Image (cartoon, rainbow over all chains, first blue to last red):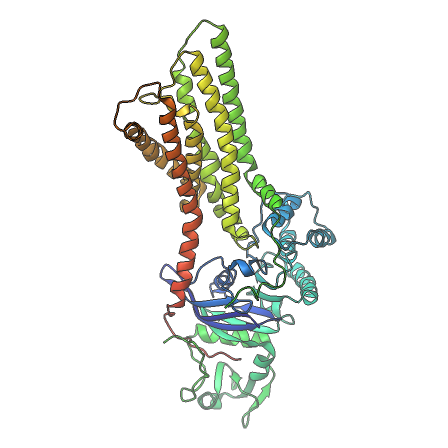
Length: 301
Length: 269
């Protein structure tokens, strides 16, 4: 079953396309990293998948074919929004009760135990909690619903690196026990490394790259060789990004091995993501023009 | 395709009492404030009635009537307009919309529960005012009477109507202060004057054109009450149904619309 499937999905605000022609398939059971710079369309995509906003173009389906926001799947899709807004003026205890009044699937015991283990007092006001505690409360409110699809929109943005690592680590341990698919957005790449099994890179409203992290990492190589031959290689290979340092050129290319005279090494997720983002910033289309890129089904004109 | 297969074996209902608790918790401050005002109005009316009963006969209560005239406007400002505007402003509406319960059901529950509480309190004030008027020896007269809006059963109907109108203004403006402004404009500027003009014609409708006698209070009041409650129901339903229709239309429209450009990049699978 595909947890998420979109075809030509787009959202326009005024005259700006926040997300354009987004065609994606995310299989069930993945922890998906959704990365991209600010304004790339991450929040728009997550809000579309949660049914919070309606698209301008295309279709979207969650949990194997339901429209986001459909009453049949509402119970199973949970979103933790960016600023994690819960009822600010309520106590934590009341926020839990409120969630209970909004969800048929609600595990009060789980929520209480999870908050207690993080030293968040039930009588504290939500608005008075620290950034980390608020993030933990928002995560608890989502996890206690035992969703099948958990959408996290930069819930860690307000946290310091140490707290971020801690929150993420404990979250992942829970997620693995729960059999839940997670789509996790962030612009901090360090958040996502060693965590994701699926990667989506968004840039300027476009899907730059989407696929299993494994196949992305094995499908790309960092090639090092003489700068003089870099231009020639770009004609023959699908080169995403190139940096020249002195007489050495480093090329991020979509290939399996090294060409004559070049040294190839494995890439990290960060290198791939940054390579694609730099390339789209430079307005540069990867790959030699005479090699047709694999066609995407359902692409626009 | 069938959505039933996706929903898993059990789709538990949201316990109604917890939803009711949530609605009470969200509306608590507005309801407490309105209950306080109602209590004050009732106390004052009882005092005025007792003074009339044991005191020195009739005395003018035009000022009192004018103060009570503001009750529906206060209800719309305090309970109606902020209801959705505040949730939009704080972002809580996004949280509510991403939960298992349909946000339409949350809104319908809120409107019904809060509207009933407001109606019940307004009934108390209206009945007391009728009593004070009867002590003064006034025939309850609807037409051309400045204080007729503060009687039973028109006062509760005005309150419910103002509440629904305020909620609609909040849904449109999504900001608390503009919502209150829009409500006051719609209520004091449009709805109330229109109803006062309509009253004359309403009389014609009820009595087939014959000029009404003052004794026929109840048919008038009944007709006006029914009109106001119908208008309130229409407004409240529109606040719930129209966004849903727009959402469905947007999804259908989007499925038939293409994005402006093809992807510049290929997708690795």
